[in-house]
Length: 107
Image (cartoon, rainbow, N blue to C red; front, top):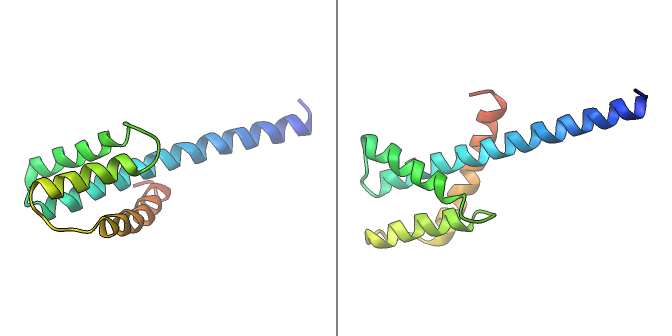
């Protein structure tokens, strides 16, 4: 194996690791968002954990964050909880930073 091959293999392994961490961080962010939304919706206990799982599952509908945003916004609207879309987006951004840090720390 040449030095070039070794470097290429190293880059491939790093790419796989980075993508795995990105996936884990997005799932963690969505779970945290679900718990945050559940609290504002008056959902507690095991029902809050179940709701957070629903938010995580919503992310598999399409690429990007739009599906998660729409699900949470729809749920707020259904419960007559007034919240701006931008507030949810801001919370998603805040929770992304927290989730990335937690995944990198191995939590």
